[in-house]
Image (tube, rainbow, N blue to C red; front, side):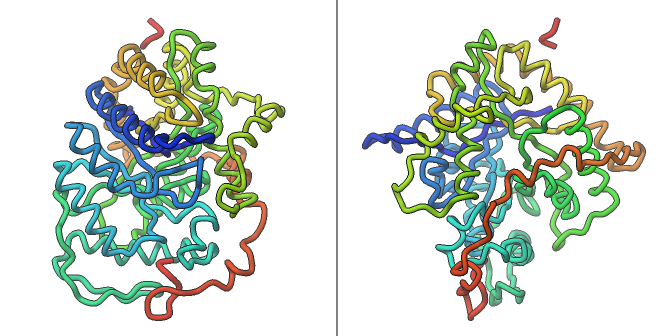
Length: 412
């Protein structure tokens, strides 16, 4: 399998005057180190107005800076919000990044996480999937058509030359954010790679991988004539240290990642500065739910992590994305973790990746028929959904262009 690292740019309170500056500079140093260590991908999110949880509102700027400090690592938008960005600006920025990075961009596409993010852009939460699909149809042909025009439900674009064009032809590889597991089938249906979160067990991983590839092979319906990208990547909490106890101590705040996003979904939006998310997190950690370890995190010694990676490898996951920058994990611990993992774990799995590619080729050519496995026992998507409906303000909100809703072997 291949390996990536993942950035939300989390910054829990309390803040110092230079906290954001230090956060971004440290993240760039970590990606530079990851490139030197042989990691395959660096993924950066896009979120808006989610203080403490994610201070990554301009990923194209951060990834451009990373492109000039690295040589080989691929630079992933994980994801670009197609609902809050105009299609032409997405195409322009992504193509520029692809040019200055010498063709190393991976293009993940998503809808936006909550009403906290969407409402300020005059978007209705309930419309976000329809807006996303319309934006895909409008945006992607800009990469390969010199002149392009589009008339859709939410976007209309007059005939223009969208420049520059990306170095990768016809466009960078495409991915879909799958924050809810049942979106995995949707990603396959649209012929795009799947960026999803950790599976709770080997059985769950196998079921969802089978669901993805069976849908990709038998029920693919692309939104326009882009190049398909059969890939499934899993994001998992990560910290590698000499012992399990040391790793857990250093990754003590990694579940802040999930806690803060659920809090925004369930109770947001909040008044700016009105909630101290880190304090709320400390209280939650005292509860039984906050003290529970799922056992699927990649947190532990090299031996422990390798054992769990063997399960994902057996399930035929293509890429594992390591979530190291979470909570208040320190820069020094993050770097040490990457170095130890790259030395004692990663080479064994990277060396076997051609076997995964051969298996995938056989599946795509229908030489291997994958068993249909019921995914319902492994679907925890309901836990991640907002518990309250969008507000009346959100339901009635309209705006945008022309009166349309807005773009809306370690073991041995």
